Each structure stands twice: as C-alpha cells, then as structure tokens.
Length: 229
Image 1 (cartoon, rainbow, N blue to C red):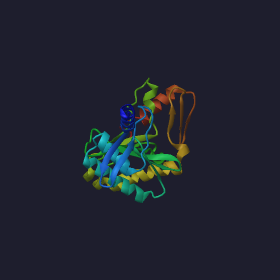
Image 2 (cartoon, rainbow, N blue to C red):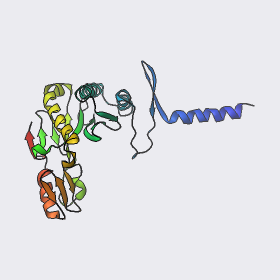
Image 3 (tube, rainbow, N blue to C red):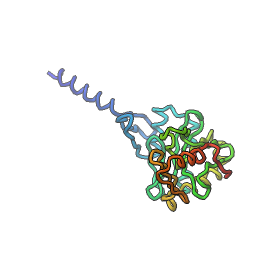
Image 4 (tube, one colour):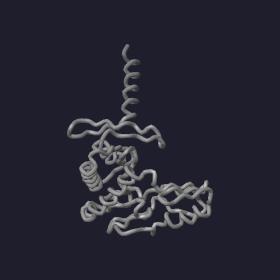
C-alpha cells in the first residue's frame, strides 16, 4: 500500500538534496545554496560559508584559504564600517561602491588575486607593489572597444602568505587609496566609452572623439603605465 508513496517520497527527497550542497563541519552541517545558472550571481551568507564553498566546489587550497582568511580579518579591522559581499569573489563596499575584491587564483594556488580602484592623484596609473604582480584585468587592443572595459581598476596577485606579510603595508596603502576613490572621489573614477568617443575622469572630459579616446586608452590602459608605491 505504501510502495507507491514511498517511491514518490524518495524521489522528492532526492530532488531536494540534489539542489543543495551539504558539507559536514565541526559545528554540524552547512548547507550551501545551489547554483542557479552560469550568469546568475550566488551570494553566500558570510566568509565561513564562502571559503567552505571555495574549498568544496573549486578545490581551493588550504594555503589560499588561510591567506584569504587573514586578509578578511585585516580588512574588517581596517574598514569596520565597510560592507562585505561573498559571491564569486569577496568584495568590499564603501558608500555603496566597490573598492576591493579578491578570491582564489588558478595561477597562484597558494595565493589569491583581486582588484582595486585606480586613484586620480596618481593619474590613474597602476601601482607597482614590490613582489606583488599588478596589471590591467583586460589587455587593451586598438579597434576592439570591449577591451577597454575594467578601465577604472587594476588587478593584483598575491603569490602566498609570505608575500602578503612582506608587502602588507604597501598593499593596504593602495587599498586605502581605492577606498578614498569610492568614498570621496567616486564621480572622478576613470570612465571610458570607446564606441561613443567619451572619457570622463579628473581633469579629462572627452566627447564624441574616438581618435582621442584611442590615444588615451593606449596610454592609460597600458600595463606599463605604472607608479611606485
């Protein structure tokens, strides 16, 4: 009599379990939400859930996880009023603007990679931070408007915890600059619309002039357009 119902119940339970990722921890079980699609951002509740998700589903190394936890702790201390979000990256917001993002990095399995905002006081150059590699997130190619995206920020890569500890003061110097751009000078962040021939930034106002935009992109988006911290 119960055979049919038991089969239905069993299938229902299996379907529910397939939609979550359950991981055992010392505190019990943590249920991670299902990914709803390749283009739908999934947010986790806190750092612990986020790093557990990285280790469970992306095989993030213990070394990288420990580095990210150290950075998270330092960020919380440095920016107690900032808003933290945990999706693909851990991102940090001030005045509702993102000024820092970081996550595991495939190139540096024991490290991490992230991004900060360029600062107007450095004429939107990329910081050179000792042994911490920095560059544009996307290589600019003349004639390809989409390659000018990500213009207002640059990427950095922390190879491991030792590198982080060695260059921590310099790293936080550029993070503080990024925070200042988000809180005080957001309207002056570098904005480029290649197709419309527009550039907006501190001291720059280009309108409907694609040749000027191309010339500026070749200078400002060059990975060698740098300054020493």
